Image (tube, rainbow, N blue to C red; front, side, top):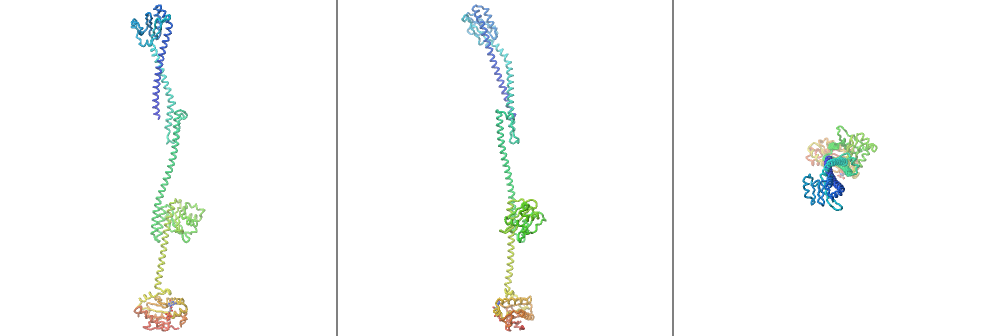
Length: 626
Ligand SMILES: Nc1nc2c(ncn2[C@@H]2O[C@H](COP(=O)(O)OP(=O)(O)OP(=O)(O)O)[C@@H](O)[C@H]2O)c(=O)[nH]1
């Protein structure tokens, strides 16, 4: 800006000097012209004045033809300053010319040419515009006096005036130029430079505000107005700029906040993806896990969940029988142990909250110091400062809690984490449901096995007496054919009468008591069976005939001692008839059973309460002594 103004200043200076010089020159020329005209006018006035003095005398001298006086008068005139020539032409032919060559036109006399020959050369215009005067005598014009001016003297005078004029004008021009430049510099250039400095100082990026110089601020002229306009524009632009900066800052803040939100969302999405991946893996493992390896799966689950959440404790607790028991536990400290099981009654508020809201987040245990003192005491006891718990439920039934906690720093929690932890809790519920289903299945299988065993037993057992029934008995008997052993066919005497006398239920009771007696009396390797309504059969491996006879007697004695009253019997008590055979003499089951039946029949024939051993071969009848 400064160099630009300096250039304008130089141009203005040159123009002012040129204009001043031109003006001074014009002034000088005008003054010279004015002086010239003044000098000519003065010369004419002097000539006219002098002529008025001499013209009467000259007219008298012409009248008197006094040449000498004429000559003197004209010489006097010719001697006047600025008079170039004096020429007198009378009506009488007098012609006198003094001074330079007259140019009188038709009045010029031929003889006067000689006089002009020796005259000094005066410039042709030295006699221009002559003063022509009429010489009158007694009112009559008798001659004409022509006086030519000598301009060379005027020019000479003017020439001599021109030098001081030139110097004077030059000085005036210089003075005027100096004054103009001084004024220009002080009134315009300095302020323009101040304005330029102010304009240079105007910078929106600068912190400090630009202020116009005082010489600009307080002047009510064009430059002051420009400065005021520039300052006003600067203030307005600065205001707008400040507004824009404010909006930019707001936008930047919003941009940063948005960026932060996007980053947080991005991190959360990554975390959610990781959490969902773990949830899918855990769910799959829970789905494949059997009840026996659920503990290992819970270990995998708690460890991975704890590492993903970067917490210090992960616990899976189960409610049951009024107790809270730890099903799973993880801590980054390898020797950390979970707290021991505790009673639900010791955590009543938490248990109630889990039942109501399903999710409980305690960012600082001090918050529950007054509201839930039991829970506060327990959490302080196990060293937990911050905990988030999620109910494991089956419908409305509260099964347990999945809890993550910190011992030192508060949990960095969020709704997204709560949502994913709720799903983990649901996965745990699925695992426990599977466990319960498997347990139920196991119980059902065991029940089925028990039923099957019972059915199998029932298939081979008589329901009333608990003895073997016919089928296994026949199989066993078949296996003992040709071997040393015995077969007994036992029938209750007069049993129809007993039923008739005491009722069918009492008859059943008699059958059961007799079966029990057989079990107690027979050898351990014997197989007693109920093969008919009131008919029993026994196969006894390894028993010879002698032992068989003794056994039959023992049986009859045992029944007698049992002394079950029987009013339909002549004995007055229940008795048995026995048909017994040794199996080594039998060829088949049919043969053995036929022989035993025959012996039994024989025993009945003998009056009942009798045992017949090997009746058809070596009849041995044992009569019970009454
Ligand atoms: N209470 C009861 N009675 C039965 C059962 N099975 C068969 N009886 C009865 O046993 C009786 C058998 O009678 P019988 O074949 O005539 O023989 P008995 O009366 O014992 O006469 P003897 O054998 O000649 O001494 C019938 O009245 C049947 O009803 C049973 O399970 N319970």
